[in-house]
Length: 259
Length: 256
Image (tube, rainbow over the protein chains, first blue to last red):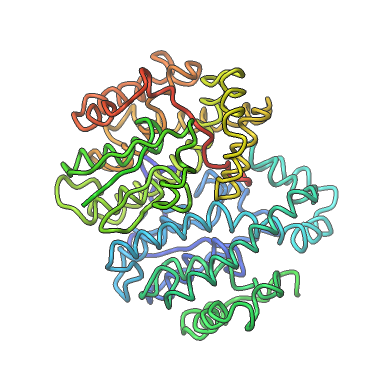
C-alpha cells in the first residue's frame, strides 16, 4: 500500500501490534518470523481469513486496502510485508537481517521481489484450488457473494471470486505448476552455491522464502526431496531448527484444512 | 568501473541513468535497441543471460532490476544520498518503488504499447523477429512479447490497466497536492521510480493526467524534469520522442 500522508494514531507509541492471518505463513509469516528473530515483544492480532475479517469495517479502518499483514509501531501504520521486513530490521535492536555486503543486499531484494510477483501468487493459486477454495465454499455457501461484495477494489473482487468459486482454468493451474517447478530449480541452484539464499548471511530473503517454500516437499514431492534437491532439503532443515522458527510453529494452530 | 546497458531513456531504463547522473558517477553507456531484439543477441546474452534491460555491470558483477540497481548505487557510492536515513522514510521509498514496479510498470507498458505501436509496426517487428522470440530466456517475458506482437491486448486487459493507473495516480495526486516529494521532505529514489513510469504518460493517456484533474502530479513531474541529472538522462535518447518508446513490460500481478 502507498504510504499514508498522515498516519492516524493507533495504540500506544511504545507498542508493537501485528495483524496477521492465523496460522502465520506466507506474507503473514514474514513479519511474524522477523519480529521473533529480532526478539521484539509484540501483540498478536489474529485476523480470520476464513471469515474474511480482513474486509470487515473495523480492519479496513486500519488498512483500507484490506490486505494482511499490517504492523502498528509508534502510531504508524506499516503495510506491505516485504518493505515491512526492512522496516522491522532497522527499527529494532537484535541480530541484523540485512546483509552488510551491498551485493548480498541486492540479491536479498531480488529474491524477495521474485517471491512477491512470481512464486508467491503461483503457489497461492494452487493452494486455493486444492485446499482453501473447497473449504470456503463449504463454509460460506450462498453467502459467498456477500463476502465478495465487501472486497474493496474491483480487481481484487474478481480475484477473490475466482479463488472462492474455484474457477481457475486448467491452463492457469498448469502454468502456476510450472512456476513452482522453476522456483524449485532456482532455489536448489542458488543454495548449491551459497549457504543462505542471498549469500553468506542469513537474511530477510531466507525468512521470506521459508514462509512460502516450507510446504514445497508436499506440493512438489518429485522435485523437492533429498535425492533431487539435497541443498534445499538441508536449508529447510536448518531453518526448521532455528529457535524463532520453532517458536512460530509452537504458536501456530494447525492449518484449517487439517483441523 | 561502471557500465550501464539501457534502452531509450524511458520506464525502467531511465531510472538507473538518472541515479548515475544524480550521484555524479562516471559510467560507460551501452545502448541496447529492444525493438531490434538486441537484448537477445549473443553479445548481450553473454553479459546478461536473462536478457533483461537495464543491467549494470560493476566490477564484473551483473545487476538487474532497476529499483535494486538504484539502491545498490546509492549504498555503494558517495554523492548526494537518494534514500532517507530513517527506517520509516526508507519504508515509504520501498512502498513507492513497489507501486512503480508492480502496479505502474505493467500497466503503463500495456497502455503505451497499445497506443504508440501501430498494428503495422507490430507486424513489421514480428516479421523480422519471429526467430528471435524463442531466444528470450525468461518464460513470462517470452509470453509477454508473443502476446503483444501477435495478438495485442484485448479490451478487458486495457480496461484493467487503465483502472489500475487511475487509482495509483489518484493516490499520487492526494499525496503531491500536499507534499513536494513522495517520501519525507527530500527528493529520493521514490520520486525517481515513479517519475520513470509517468514521465510520458500525459501524451499517451491524457485522460489520466491533466491540468484539470492532476495538477499536483503535473507540477511534480515538471520539478523533476528541471533537474540537470534528468535532462542529462533524457539526452541519451536516439529517437526523437523517447517517452513514446514502449516494449512489452513485466507481467501484471495475477491477484489484482
